[in-house]
Amino acid sequence: MDREEMFEKFLGVNTADEEVVFSSKEFSKRNEKGCYYPYEASEYEGLIKIFDQITLTPQDTLVDIGCGMGRVLFYCNQRFLCNVTGVEYDKEIYERLQDNVAYYHVKFKNQEKKFCLLNMKAEDYVIERGDNFFYLFNPFSKDILEDFMNKIVESIHKFPRKVTVILYYCTYSMMETMRNMPFKLAGIIKLPAYRFDPDEKVYIYELGE
Image (cartoon, rainbow, N blue to C red; front, top):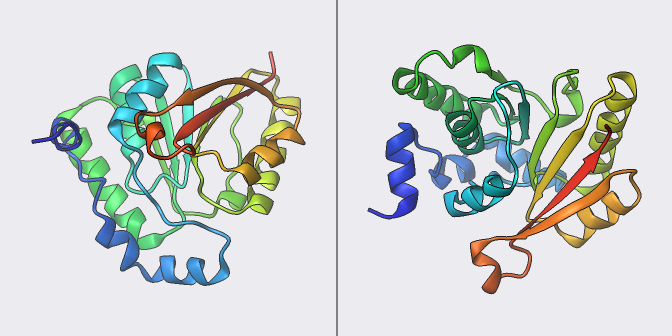
């Protein structure tokens, strides 16, 4: 049993079933438009490296945009006991997410109130005043990313706080978008697969107090 399987068994979930993604009718619709990209689970080795450098508290809220079947939500909640919000547009994948959450809560009790799951587009998500960490694994096109980052900036103006944005597999177009934003680049984390793919890295951006 490899580390990926060990983590899945420990968390009591199945977040790596790619057949669910590519058989999804919603994925086919999105793929035609080219605005949203398919869900791909972040590797646990990568999550360990990221969150060895980024620490959350039980009072923090991490929002995973395009959360898929929930791997980042489960990992972060189990490690930090933080609040987690998962935003997933694909209805079929969202159903699998709900199944995973049900199994997770059987094993890790008293965390139900820490979870918020939403079946909607990223553009429709209303940023809450307590949302202070955002995780994005290359979920959509440059235009949508720009609009979403502007929403975060507006939220910070309305509810002053420090916000951290975690961009996993940060492409050139994503970096170009962020250069035109008031966010400060706080760090770059090279992931275990970086030696095979130079895009396998995470860019950390911060804004606010």
